[in-house]
Image (cartoon, helix red, strand yellow):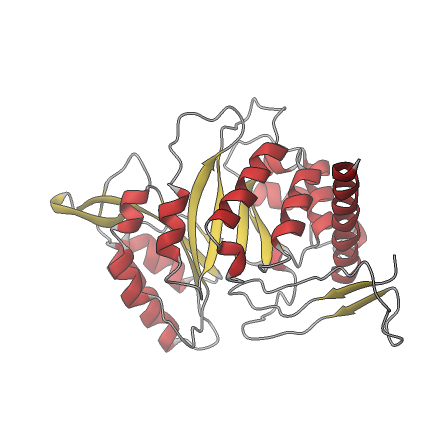
Amino acid sequence: LAALVVKINGAALNASNYQYEVVLNGTPDPHLQIVDIVLKDRDMGRAWGSNLTAITWAHAANSQALLEEALAGGVDFIEADIVLGKLDGEGEDLPVMAHPPANTSDLTLEDFLNKIMDFNREHEGQEKGVKLDFKSIEVFEGSLDILDANIPSVSMTYPVWINADILSGPVNQVNTVPVDPDRFFAGCNRYKQAVLSIGWTTNWGSSFREGEYTQDQCDAMLETLTENNVTSTGQGITFPVRAGIAANSEEQLHKLVASVNETNDCTLTIWSSNGDYVDVAKLRKVIFGFGVERVYLDVPDDLAAELDLGNPGNGANTIRSLFGFTFVSLCFWALSSWLQRI
């Protein structure tokens, strides 16, 4: 191993802009040790610094009242769901904020985005990020004109994530129809300043113990990104992965992130539903293997408390976690490459 150079640029909340580059051959820079790590804060770095697990969330802000509560609170990110439905149960179908099976709301997508934009304009330094979870390809395509008007093309001062489950995933998930990936990426091509939050449909709960993001499922994600030219854009990507399943999928997720991060800034967003079974020890190992500067954590408070990620004695050290992610990912990548050659 001639040199291992890791370059990390940014704590920008918008894209979690961290990049690492592994150089396997060539002459090392004489000023570099075996590992050279450069940390540079930029844009919207706040009290969490490079610890993305410290970012706080408001979930399912799918009504006027819940959105106002989220804007008035101390959360960093507001997540909401979009379906085709009716405003106050009347009129034509249009993009409204609701989670299936609900299809009525007192809040449209347009009003939701306008309220966040107004708040952020008036509260410099306290901006809220927004995660838009589109539940079908029909509502996403029906929202494009609204997104055109409300996602700034330049000088965006707050993060916007566009989320969809684009592939069928674990465990034997057949009940939820994924959002068509080709049509989704075709629309997202208009918003290269937004982060793509792209995942798998999942089936999990309190009684589950076995299940993982399989290598085939991770390969399918990489193939879909490549076929739709997402890997040529450099656009920020986060993979939302369900905590209980991610805990069983360390090797596959390392390979996926390492592959995508060659071209796109890439993170994980670990999420969980109330009542999900999670092997806490294994999930901690996954998080610290990647590093807290590369993992968003969006889980119930009781699970977050069990994970205890804020205790430095338990490994929440940015530099150490970063080196761990890079080294482990490099090992997985090297092993995979070697196996392909034999």
